[in-house]
Image 1 (cartoon, rainbow, N blue to C red):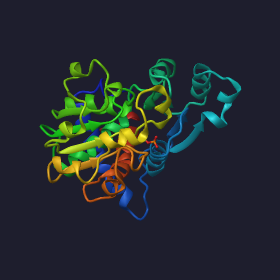
Image 2 (cartoon, helix red, strand yellow):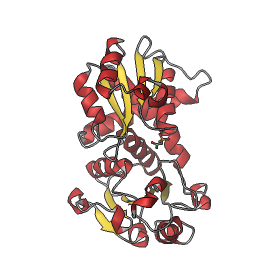
Image 3 (cartoon, rainbow, N blue to C red):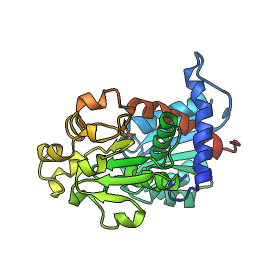
Image 4 (tube, rainbow, N blue to C red):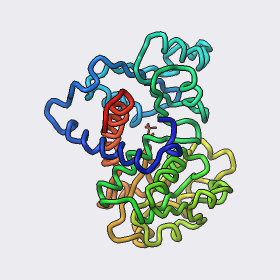
Length: 300
Ligand code: CP
């Protein structure tokens, strides 16, 4: 599971249907099924994470797998061990699945070429974050009953967002109309070739939207002349009580997290009646259970 770009419509539906069937497990008093008993899952994270790493760990545990977390800051990576050597050593311990987050685009592909285990991309640089897009599509489908022909606005730093890229691939494959918006410095030049509308105004992207996906502003990029100041960015691109009225009356508001409150999204919108941000987190566990199940030989 290296990227959404490689998935067909049928494969996406298989993952979403399987995830739907796992939702119920997390509502039980005893939140555990024996499906992956005896399997070993390694979470190898070279970047910080709250939602993705925790939900992969919970997903593995709810399926009765043994889950091991490795963080670059507490492993031999700090002693200079390369990704290739780390991969070979993990492979020698014979786990069943390796999940990797890395700042370098393509790191999961490199890993998949080196080891015999299934590899899951948990986010690689500005390239892809396929499990985020799958949980986003699961959330949209659960709330709207379909993805096809919905108008979906993705707003923010599109150029540096692996979440945006994976969602664009997935949503287009599923037949949605996608509009992106952000400052010119945050919009890649080749965007139209991906079959999306491109706007430099938030209001144009919001007009008639069924779903609005706000992206985290990567504050760490503030000194790269991508945007003049957080206040200036918020003035033009913060989703708030006024501009949300341009979207459909039953719009869904999404955000992958972590949120910069008052920068890309006003607190009353993040916590308001249109928000499905915490539903996304809940669905993240089910999507990751589905992927672990399917990649270890489960049938949908
Ligand atoms: N959405 C997401 O990837 O969040 P984390 O960085 O906390 O995993």
